[in-house]
Length: 374
Image 1 (spheres, one colour):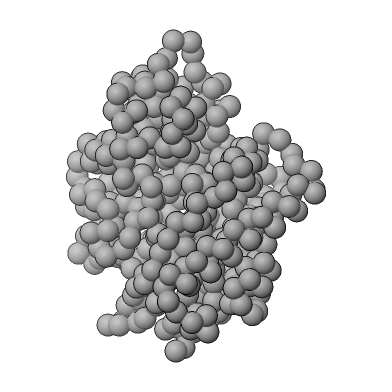
Image 2 (image 1 turned 120 degrees about the horizontal axis):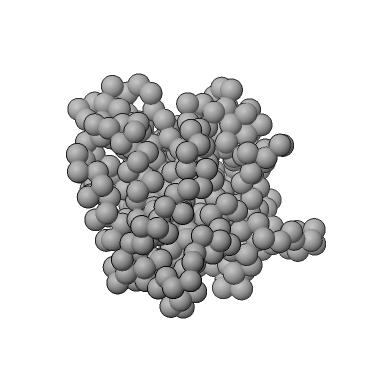
């Protein structure tokens, strides 16, 4: 099996810090197109105390001492190795069959607008390669940022390879903690992508605060409330939303303090949740209507695809388009990002770029990540 047509593992934990997603993927070329066959996937739960600490640090509220940072880097790396080993065992494959692992780690900071821009993902790749025995690609975002880019989003090139259709204008929408879009014009020209704002990040922490549940299952809390137009205006007034792409963001910007600073006394928790859902979908719809107004199909992935309130709002706000899960096109919506980091590992092993400068704003295509050989 060649590095081009082979088995890869992708490991990813996103802004929501809900689980480590792991995917075993076989990449092949047929009929002149790339095909990604996800053979097995799983979501490895975080140890709860570790998850809560990562959530606190990810909001940029405090500065962690060096010793704690080192321990967290080790703990996250060990957790990623556990997820990879569990995936291998459940899939029933030999380790030698896997060409490489693409390990994203857990983002603690993403500061593309700082005087000295940086992005920081923890999860020591040395532990992943040592405990799995499989070559690991880590530190995947920072090369793009060193080249003047945002280091995000990184998957629009894969979206284009797997989901472009010459017969219609499409967009791929990832509703993770943060929402990001990929524009796929039928012409195949001008593939672009960027973060549009919070998707589940604020809804999750608001729901957990008021119900004890880690997320708003089936959108029940949002469905029980009404959109508060004055609160929505205050949320949308953040200058970040008017920033032109390329752009990216994270929990260090859209966190609980950001929300609390815009609340006034008297809003019910359900109304706030309904308004947060409206914020998520309105910013997506505004971005699409202003950049790809004739979009005919919006393919949704990420945890938000399971929230009927979000999906219904999108359908209403994008009446010209069919809004549907990428599952209708043979890709598991819960594991697109893990599949993506398997693909990024493949790109690195082949010496091929993993970024799209039209998306990230980098000075040019770059091979991403550092290789930790088995």
